[in-house]
Image (tube, rainbow, N blue to C red; front, top):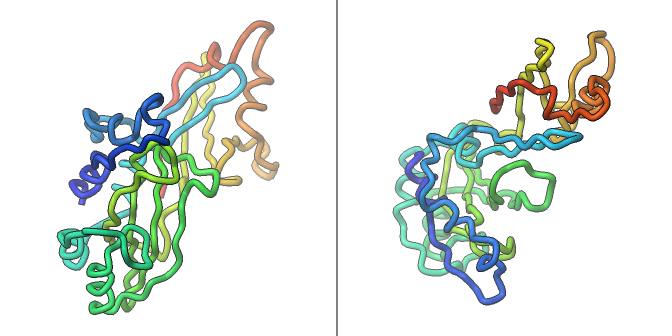
Length: 230
């Protein structure tokens, strides 16, 4: 299964004269020499006023997807053209799905919401009896309107892909360790106050209270331990 994901992340989806990848780099070019298993699950950038985070797409997919015999069979099918009504799927592949009895459900593109994933993904959910599947494409270009891989079929543990949930522990230089996550709204990092019944507080607001004149958040952070939760 991981080989299929890596193959998608390294797929050359070409270029287009109107694509700005010539200036900024296309995803497939950036991924060519990456050893994904050696990357952190979550990468952070510490700014003066806040901490930004990005979830590694490879780690996210590896922990949310699997392949059964049907997936492996489908993923070996040739995709000559995207001439079906399903994103990234040929008509002959669509016929294969129909013959197996797959029910086509909703489609999505992660660009359409506040996603923290390192690359955009596009997918269509499917159902076969009690099992849940997804036809997944990875955006490998620069301009989000094009540069997607052919769709690959994966088995899901649930009806939808897992949430982009992260849990961190941050050690401050005074020895205090703070547990934080993005469970409040799925986007902003929050920390629970000492009063367990209080409302969550944004991490950057909490850390700003600890800053002395002239200090930045980077000055008071000693260590960040990051992980994705499922």
